[in-house]
Image (cartoon, rainbow, N blue to C red; front, side, top):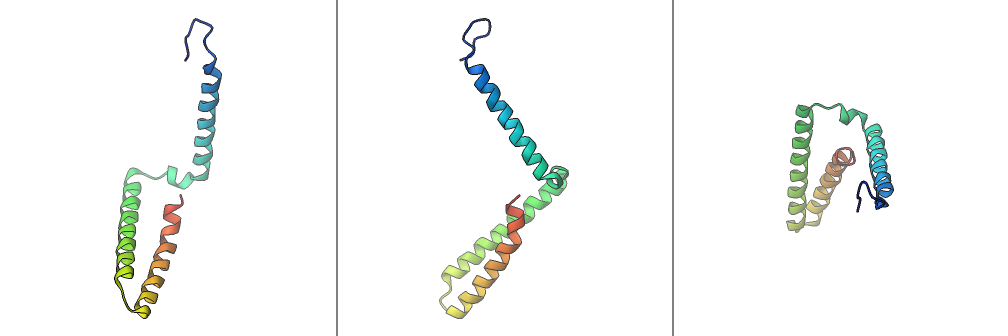
Length: 94
């Protein structure tokens, strides 16, 4: 509890450390992602919509894989799923 004007300001230094830590984390993230920080809102919306469509396709492919009975078809679907995962990897790990 912080009370200004009294001697009960013990938590103020710890709050300062927390804020400083958050600021350093934000600065680190901003340096790691310079290209995404410069994106316009329209580009971000387009990217998120494309990502949502790819995730939906992946979910449908997983459903088809679990419902398929024949092994050779499962192998083909699993290959498609791995290809889709490779396409999604750079989008998910920002």
